Image 1 (tube, rainbow, N blue to C red):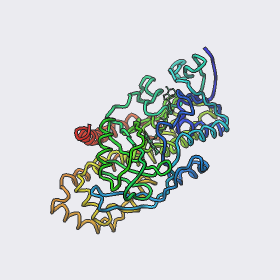
Image 2: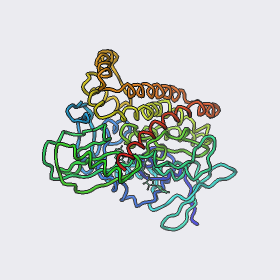
Image 3: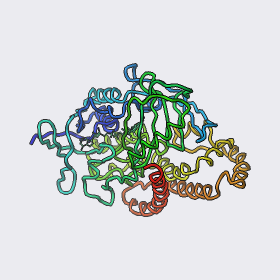
Image 4: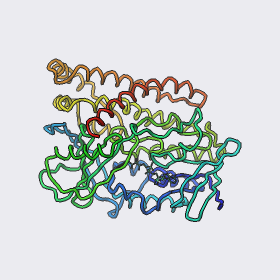
Length: 458
Ligand SMILES: Cc1cc2nc3c(=O)[nH]c(=O)nc-3n(C[C@H](O)[C@H](O)[C@H](O)COP(=O)(O)OP(=O)(O)OC[C@H]3O[C@@H](n4cnc5c(N)ncnc54)[C@H](O)[C@@H]3O)c2cc1C
């Protein structure tokens, strides 16, 4: 068996693991990144992908060159289900080729000194006296024993490291359930005929969207819980509503997590980031920039812990605190509140689009950039008579409104609790016991909605 040593072993060279390795290598630490697949194949199953332009400056990533950039998109348009109304918000998004973006990111990490071992699969964590001291892997040259001070799980939705270690009161090791995943199914369309909207077009009712892709092609996609076959059917039903026709050139699909993150992202000598920690945006399933936010925090906390030679859960805990009190709290709110909104019937959503102040350009932008449901109190007050009239006329069901109010209250309580995430592992057990019942309510509502979709489409 070959032996290696490093300060940090990161499992997974996707966007999360590579970005974290880049940051930690820049801080002067030895990083080994283990990647099961050939590096050149990463991103090929996705093809085109989106990131907000402003994220590049925020995360210190150079803007993509012509070789990576497919389109610079200036707006996002949200459509009512009957497509008679829409709201367009300014939002600069870069549409890029993911395989090339990945290669660029791998280059940045390698230039900073990180070593990426491709075709190398994580096999297990090695412990000494109950503390992780390394990982075992298998690569092209056989078995590999890597001695390290910190192990990071960046292995995507499967959470290879997290699910391989024994659960502790601080670290959940359960695998993700089907009902906590969304299948993203996308088709590339060519030979377009008819009226195609500009930039990104989003359809709440189908969790569907379309946007420019390679050359003159469009990507037309949907999100659908658990069922690949259901996702395909739902995409076809969505496609049939669009005001243009085209020829499907190719298709792709993949899974993204849709559930709360583990209550803690650290334990002794361990951290988890990205899809492995279920930190995708709850309103569209995207996970690249939301994971960069976590990785930026994780890199700073890990650097301090490594410098102080203290890799205990206490030393790594600030990653939990900083992540959950900010982005984690916002995502908790949205994860709990979204099912009540998306399970409104299409006529109800059509009605809400007709009420000024409900779906707005500012709100759409704020949701995408700040992950907040911002409402202008004056506009909300102005909308009240129309909403009451809608309820009186049956265009908005009382039950739907009651459900939204109930779930928004649960979501708001949850957000407040995450904003007070325990400063130290000592208060963690009590905090988990208080937040768990809220998640039970939110999960039940989401699973009910997902099961309804499965009955409809799968
Ligand atoms: C069809 C589709 C389209 C999407 N479009 C967008 C988009 O436009 N914008 C956006 O922000 N997000 C998008 N997402 C979500 C985004 O792709 C993920 O959130 C993101 O890739 C997560 O990055 P990650 O590094 O955490 O995980 P991953 O990208 O899954 O990377 C994990 C890596 O770990 C490796 N690995 C796994 N197990 C092991 C092991 N045992 N040993 C060694 N290596 C291992 C895997 O091979 C993989 O390379 C999309 C997802 C899908 C499915």
